[in-house]
Length: 107
Image (cartoon, rainbow, N blue to C red; front, side, top):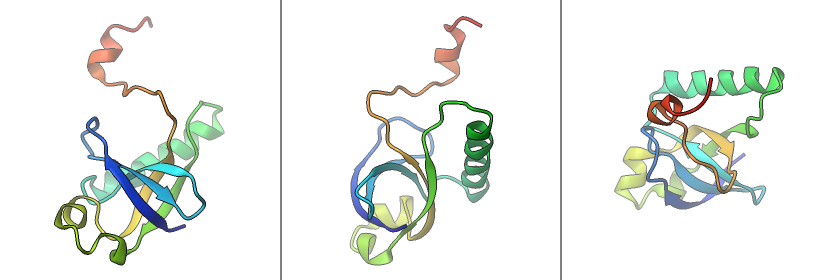
């Protein structure tokens, strides 16, 4: 599935994800070149396993970012990149859970 629009860069997230729209009209959180390949593969595998275990994980896809979509933006070329990328369906009103947040959550 191709990405047809890059909407915005998220401020949260060490992997510098972008909110994008895919050709199916849905919005996705897309991780490209800023996230190492091994990390993207690991996230995809973990998402598939988590869903198989019944965890509430958003649908994810491997998408393609066409070069012509980003070719005139040096930032998008270097941070998102063209080609295959990991994408999870965007869920509004969610918050990143990091180590600091986990410290304050009950076991």
